[in-house]
Length: 590
Image (tube, rainbow, N blue to C red; front, side, top):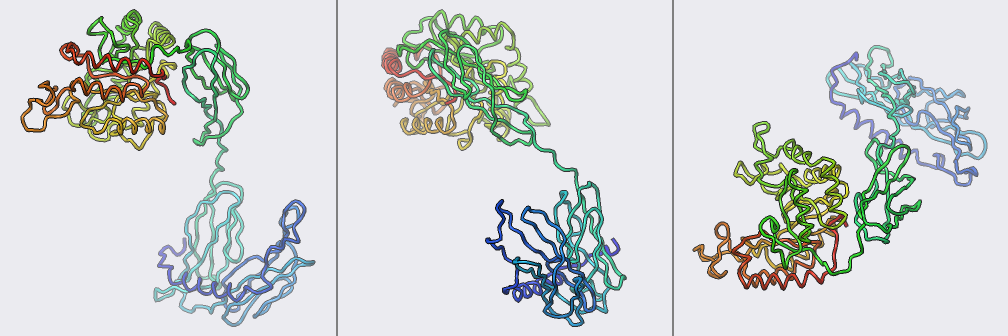
């Protein structure tokens, strides 16, 4: 640039804007162009005449040439001859305008026929004897091919002030009119727009970059919904499909559906077959496809009801009555035997494939003790064998395996206290959701969830991959019905099933008199102060509210002493009768 020290343009810009505003005000008369609906062509294109440039600032005795453009009824824009008239100064038949006195003038171009004329505003300013430089704005711009941008030139005077001046424009890589309106060409590259003073003494340059045109987004993924589903034999399910483009947008697609284990229409309506098992629905578009695992089960007669039982039931006792389910941690070496044991006891099972102490999945990363995905992934990958995949698929198909929890209490944070996942913010719903998605890649038919209260871990956000939420109640939370209803509303909003739980050993009414003796709770203290165990009355009242409401109902945890008390056994039996009569619901996304 020939004048690189660009002083403030604010004064000149404000002066120029004032002149143009005044010009537009006096120019708004009957001769100003306006669309004429009567001249519309049959295809909806309105012809018009346009004067170029539409506005311009020149100096006294500086000549500027105006030209006319005409749009035809077909939408073609071409240069055209016009009859010229000016409100001051002079203009010849070729459109050359000049004025000897400063002022604001109108240049009017009129074509043939009924089309209305167009008007341009000319701001004529005196020459500046103290001109010391020129500043063009903007000085750098990026434009797509065929785009327009208006440049302005400001005079820098010898005393540092600014003023409106007339300039001549030239440009590379496109075209520019006398008013500074630049239209970029089609060739990519870096080009220049140059404004030169009328005496040729000063100039300034702006840089114009025309980038490579952005490639049109292409279809990169097909998404079939739902991602997994459990259906009774002979029922139907509507599947939907959409595409994602390379730019991340969701778009509609016309998919070709196919299915095993049943039939599917061209519109995605699947009708289940007659044999229980794990089957597939596939949606394909242009070489891309997505698959949903379909778990066909025998029709539910209603006798099983909602699965119900304490954590680690079948790992502590073989006398399971009156319970019908158990939750349990497991390992790759033990899961097949665990599933077999649950089947032999006629107990439903929810497993924690990556359960156990939080320390199993923690490392010091970048100096911070926090969750280590590589450790979690290594544990999960240990289950990815043909034997385990087949055993899990069979257990899901016959109803023995309810699901797998990927993590316990992701909201817990701290610094190395043995029950932490790292500093606050280490775990998020999005991160937990990615764990659920990872498990589904190994076991597509297995419902996958997470353990935390629905109301304390980013409750305003939803899961996209996790199927269910194990949400545990304690008396200190507040009214059990209000909390249950809030959880069910959360589940409906976020499309996850609620797997309710209650804390037997630490969820009773807390000790409040300063002495940790839990005398109001029968003297049965919890695991740590001031917690108390639930009373039999609480087990029954809380259980009758929560038990029938979710897809399953568990309790933390199996304890010989707690389970052996007669009053508690009676409460368990009452809850068992209630959940057995409740309708069975799969722990899958809703």
